[in-house]
Length: 445
Image 1: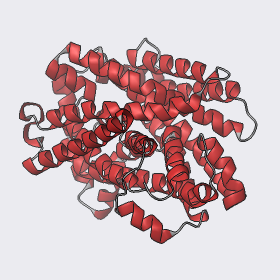
Image 2: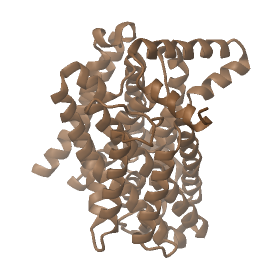
Image 3: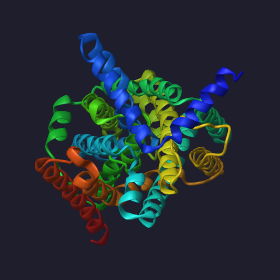
């Protein structure tokens, strides 16, 4: 007689190795259960809760330590002038996250998996290498954020980073999909503290409103770097890869796509609001006082004499929560892509008692990034900031591939983008390319 744990493991293995028609049957079953829930008002609420997660986690994890540092520098160095890039990036975030979830729901595969099927193994390997190159610096930035938050209370990085890495790995490798998701959603709630910080800073709300909706172009190369970094940290390639693979792992289908869209919009808007609150808090205090900062830890310390002790506490607590959240999600996103690229199963529900490429990639990335962050004297701040610029430079390749796949009738079937959506997608890509071109031009000039 098999134990309950053994029966569960066997069932998971059967699900992962199930043939395509069995997966399709399982997804239809989810769609039928979803339709039954929708018959009543309470059922609609439960149906929304059933798909909640991919959009919220993918969005909020963009407000990671690299993002917090980028938004802090944006506000501290440029005041309110460049705030408009955050709402603009948020609109693009909604657009491309919706596209990625739709592609995942229509194909049942992650981003790299679809590329591998469409353009071959070589293209899949190329996509994996690009994401790995861009993501590793970001993962180091997440653990640098954990070290910075620990440093606020006197914990050295060689303790805080390895302990966090071990705890996160245990949750991801030993937990089921739903258990991991619940832990991540609880951690993500800490990011609301940044909204409180934005209010405590007592900004000039008229100036905030004006500069958030009326674009003011940078006047020097540093301004364009800040714009590119803000764009890269908000609309990160790893976030687009994560939301598609995670939605597939959650079994989001075309039948459940309606409520998944709501999840995406909520997550993206919250991301923009939190990012704006961070930039506003630093613009109203640090920029006004003429204080330059190097990282989010500096921002937390500098806020105390300007906005009070609670501002520093909230900023530090938010930094720790954001760091823990992203230190789990960015390696998960990269592990999804690596497993898909080599044609192996990619899921948080895999049997962790046997070798899995997905878990091996996650653990390897965690060990490597923790080791880098624990090295004494390493210049982490340039690594954090420039990793976001790298994300922005690689972003066009990702969104162009995403646009081509989402508009392909052979891949999407009836879920293919309509002409207006395709036009809007290419228009947004043109704006991204123009921003990157302006950055390059400012460097060459």
